[in-house]
Image 1 (cartoon, rainbow, N blue to C red):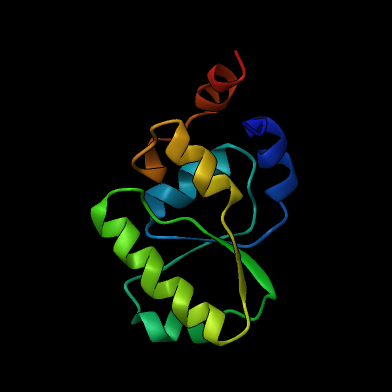
Image 2 (cartoon, rainbow, N blue to C red):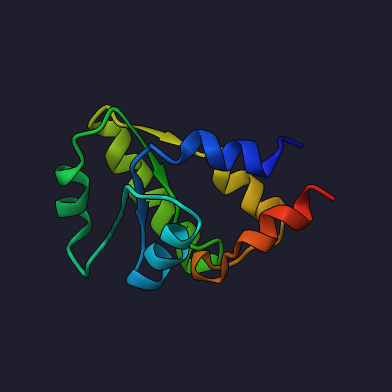
Length: 112
């Protein structure tokens, strides 16, 4: 498995789209600075507002989050935006279900 700390460091400068403010706060506490939320906007509006060539789409890893991920990813890909899923895969392997529950110790423990 890839080292979560290395993945974390490599992706800190990439734009990350999360569901809500608590998710954003959790990622900012880990040093991410380019985090945006859905802000209760229509999904098509969120997709159309992305101007990056690649983003990290980090919805929760529960049933609803996976459904939202699929809808957003398809919309982004239609607009030519690549979604980087490395961090999402690692979180799934670690058993993380919600982004807001992330803490630095989660990544430190994964290396042991």
